[in-house]
Length: 378
Image 1 (cartoon, helix red, strand yellow):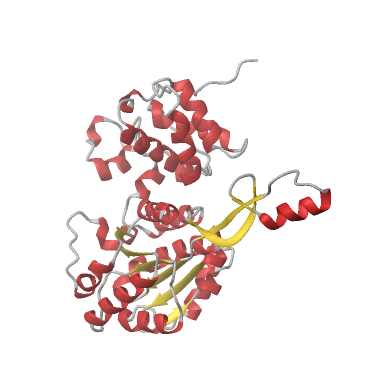
Image 2 (image 1 turned 90 degrees about the horizontal axis):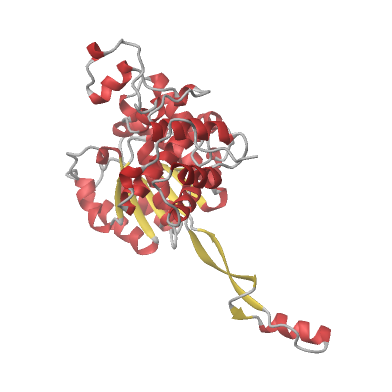
């Protein structure tokens, strides 16, 4: 019995056989398409795929197909979805998805982003090789989505498996290699009467903590719910290594509310706990309050705000500088960073910019996926 090959119509990927960067970008886009279709093609599986492709001929469709199938799929239920996505992504075929999130884009939807002439085809005819609806929504600003489209983005965000970098712990575990474990070696020698084997140990690892501050002021109102849903994904992935606070006119811890399994229930609990929705922003005072009570030592500090500071920008800059001396890394998430003409000209952004390790966008699902990858690779 012969093993199945790639779906009919898949033509291989010769366009990026010469550049490793293009290969990584193409396969990362394919993994994102699989995630939108419900396949657990997370960051770690994607890295395994790229490592496998280094030893294969990427111009050969069968080798690419099997490398992706063996590394990106987690069970038999993923195989039909994988086949459809592989055919659509590499073969220019129309994917027939089981769920609306991966339905192909019609000529009307493609014209929204590509300027295609509707007169060339029928109004409802699908465009071969066009991006899926999920792929289009991934890159759109959540503030400009309809309620139905925003609900689709939130559903995909709830399936995000947020990555997390790991750090060395003070605790040790047995290992075949590492430093010599004298105590275990001596205990074995006393029990057996001779040194039959040298025992070794190594440090264990644990997830690096993340402290997330979500601005819920009026200027951030179009993005606050999506940011909180991303925070829910972080808490669900590492509940013991994640702290979340809402910031506006006061600092409110909301980690406990976000631990609920259902995102809708978690956000309902958050809405009852946060008293300062759509108010102003006094981020400098709230960071000073946090640092006077808690410590971010060794953690990744993530601040999600547009930088419209109602208080003293100098105070905000001083507190972010203080935070940067404690934290392992400081990442500022600004929804407006997603626009090409964005410049950090507000007083708050100019005050904190010298102390940031990263300034990233936070306006779309793709931006949150990139942020998750940064947290995994920090």
